[in-house]
Image 1 (cartoon, rainbow over the protein chains, first blue to last red):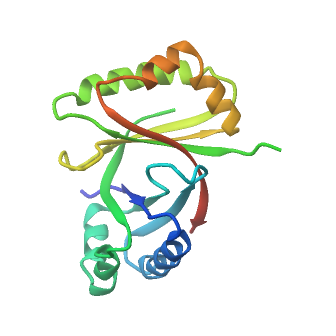
Image 2 (cartoon, rainbow over the protein chains, first blue to last red; image 1 turned 90 degrees about the vertical axis):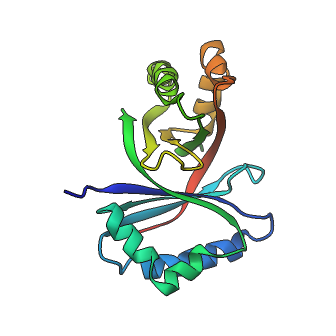
Length: 98
Length: 98
């Protein structure tokens, strides 16, 4: 029985490349949105330009398999292997919430 | 005019210290919950134990000032200066969402 997962991707983007990063990420979002099992995504941008991680995506997928299937496809795989920025994608579950 | 912000804290916790981390974080949550301007918090735990960041807190505060005031208080400041784990707290706004 698969259950929803949270995909959080923590990005470190060189200063000056922020707009280019947003462009690449938004293009990837257009592809992700059409993938089976995609629920929603929110790209967060740090208020402080000097933050360690300037962008963090918090997205919800119906299952880990749905996310893995989507990112095994060539187009999204290419986004995943971008050298423009450091990324740390991983799947999460909520442990504690208020 | 202040507006809501997203506090995202990205934690790297040594393997074997996960339960202790959850205990410390949950105690801090009990303090945070009573602070003016606190809205909600979700502590996410990575499904893969080898993820770069095993825990990520995504919380909402009514303003940046409210968050800074809360974490300038001794008790929460102490949590912030824990040596048990690496943390990267920063304030964010949503840039793109679906």
